[in-house]
Image (cartoon, rainbow over all chains, first blue to last red; front, top):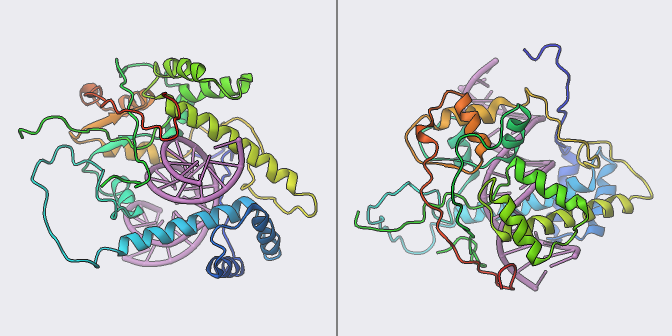
Length: 162
Length: 162
DNA sequence: GAACTATGAATGAACG
DNA sequence: CGTTCATTCATAGTTC
């Protein structure tokens, strides 16, 4: 299979070069936490001297960088404070994925997808949906929920409650 | 045990289904740039026929859509001096999401493997259900939706509900 | 070469 | 409304 087919999906992602990475990290470390759009353009121009890059790439890079740093910090942050181990009072409903707010490395996600296939699965993939539709799968076929309650999350500012 | 009522909500972020997306895009393209609150309700009602959705979701979707379009325009407009984007990051083309039928079977595969158990599965997308069936999954585990807890709209700044 | 990892890209939700 | 955050998906790159 896949032989003779046409290469339609050429969605390769940009891969920063070493030089670009150095510059990016330097800027990021300098303190320009949130570079303005103008700044983005400057950086893009600068980096374009060392390889193909677009403003979107720079923007995404900073966004990811920041999110990643935060995640790392959060993940590491658990050894401070006193150790208060108190398991929950049983009641393991569905093993909700609403785990602790400070423990959600992306690795867990991978685990659920790749090797570990022994826990709750929630299907919410727009991509899959689209693809299925293209595959000729009808939208409303079997599982037609009768009533969808309006469920809205109210995570005000504390992100994950608790 | 003895614990009544739980938030079985396994969905933290609404994911529009293909049908919902189509409708949304159509409306957005129709010209109803900023749907009124009344319009929002109508759209929500319409979309709720194809999956769980709330007015907030619709509102956010339109806002995001608008912002995204604008940002793209700004990016293009800014590039007047030197232009070196020849990669896929720009995404300036609106070409249809014509994904090849043999795209990435990974997601589908994980789906088929992931739900081979008995755990609760949250089906947001009817399409997924079809696919699962296609993969050889019995519908016994499918329509197991219990009840979507009705959560009040927080609307800090008064978003949708008023 | 399949599994795992790292990270860029996409998007929904929240804030100001 | 524009910007930013947070979560998830997809793929390049690495390991075994």
